Length: 451
Image (cartoon, rainbow, N blue to C red; front, top):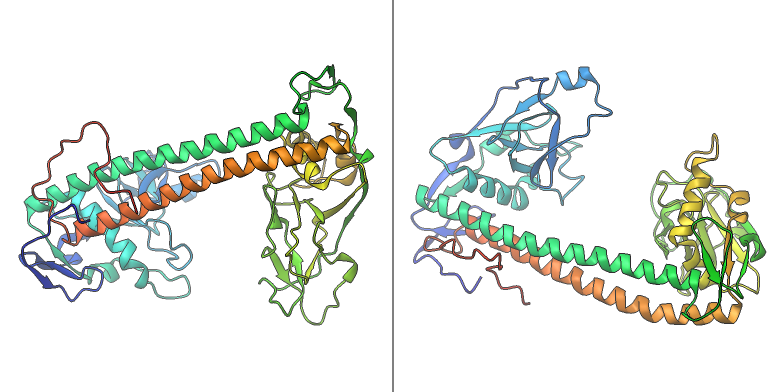
């Protein structure tokens, strides 16, 4: 924030989330400037909700007419606050200035602000209040606030001219930061797509672009190297086993306890050891299902279809107190298959298509996949030596892609931090934007993004 001027004089606001404020700002309470709107039904409007600081349309597929009839109206330029379960989600932004006309659950708080206030400024004031203070007000098991909790809070208010400047400044500058963040998010998406394309091409077509090809005879697989074997993958699987799922505690195991793996322990090719449930002390662990380094694990059943069929290798530093559940397959491969190659193969779009078809085709087995279905999947299998060469090549490529994704993610994190700091500084008067002019029309960001 060094590039922005400060006010000439400050005073202690005695409000923790505001700190020192410009000396001419006036002490106010939210109840003097905001009023709660009477709950008004309007079934002609679409349903809505708050999503990270924006009022958005809500999917009404599972919303009954009776439920919607009890919803309350929130119109464009009215404020909406989600006061529920503050301790459940500390990341969501729970205040918004609505840009659309919708009806929302009566659990929400709908507010009008005094006509003398600049709505853009109030939007950012409530944003900062939410981020810095509102989450500390909740009471009860669900940590919920009501309007009186908010209404009785103090804050310091700038002049009308400053309100408009602050609102315009933050609208403009955060929009530019958001554009840069969106570009980085798009870059990450493209990098991940390219990463998967490189892997898929290598494990289904090989590395030699001049190798003679043959028709695989398999839908979606098309041509494969002539010397690769096209066969059911049961040719490279020696054994598939699954563990047991006794009634466990709904917490992860400590280092002194046994833990039974959850389906989510295998996700996007990565093994997550913390995804387990503690085995009660009175239940004896089945040692034969202990998970060991180098094991190939596959998710068999899950509430999320995207997780079913996910495969991961257990790393060498795995904790020794984990057990297979009946929702996880442990796959023992033959000596003709490299476990790393198998993991990459099972994550290809071709294999994912087979998995999803097997799930949807299994009557009475929703969100589940069987051993028989997996063993019958047909694929092209290169010789073991070539599998190792493929894995070595892809390991280097994957590292490059992952490094670029990390850099883009770090850039997003820095920009988000700058965005948060900029909002806080402007709303609480740590920077003086009275002389700011909306001159940057080329969408260049007006904040320092270097560390």
